[in-house]
Length: 347
Image (tube, rainbow, N blue to C red; front, side, top):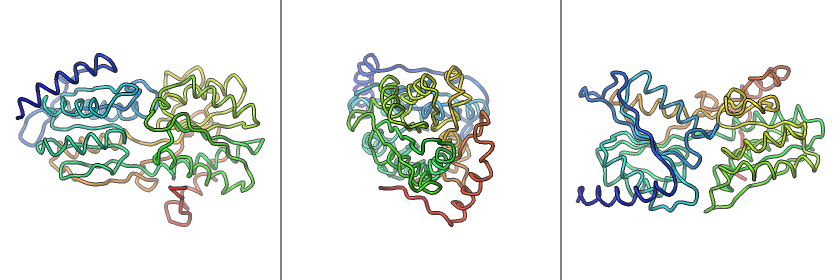
């Protein structure tokens, strides 16, 4: 049966990758190993946009790059494509498992359904699912984040810096996860300016996930907000956020980044001067920690939450635009950590 699955997965994934993405192999560096001395083989299945999205996937990539540098790993990375089926996601995970990659990381909640099907067939593989608790099992670790807490802080920053008392939120896809960003951001804005207006726009609705990788659509949505009086837009939209920054630069407005400290990313150098701050979501830390735990023989199934207290989310200070309000932001951070402020995560 294992051989049959291998043949089927190889054929299906070969067709799928030809249509929707690529892969990269790397893995002869360093001396990292499992407890029995064998080199750890790590597979990474990216979400739409892949390595180079300047946001969510790149954060995951930094985690695996750090682990490779420190431990030495045999790595295989596979990318997702726009509009792909669940069958292609499932085949991508199966290819990694069948290829001997005994540590497999599925980057993004879009893999929850496929991982729930795949994991029981490969009990010798330890899986991690980023951003979702919807797939569980003895060999699945769930890496999740308190996005609402980090978004609250950048909401405070937006409110304090806005001169029009109109700010915007652009979400890539209207899902419960991205709604956490919206709800936290709005709560932060309202904390300091209860009468401020928060305009909200989602680029696509499920099952259309192209909203995470459509800069043109992000630019159009941001322009509409800026023309309506908004002066700062927070984009939780993956690669589509690049278009938000482009619109902000053209209009003389400001944008707020997400997932990575986007001010410091080379691919955004031309627009970094309009990035007020970023909500940092340390997917790199989650990925690195997971790989480290497997290497040390300390894999733990179930949910691990990275919040403000754990250092899993934060706000960025790069560029100096929030230096004058840093004391206020840090005070709000302290209140969240000690429980004085409880940030909502749902509408």
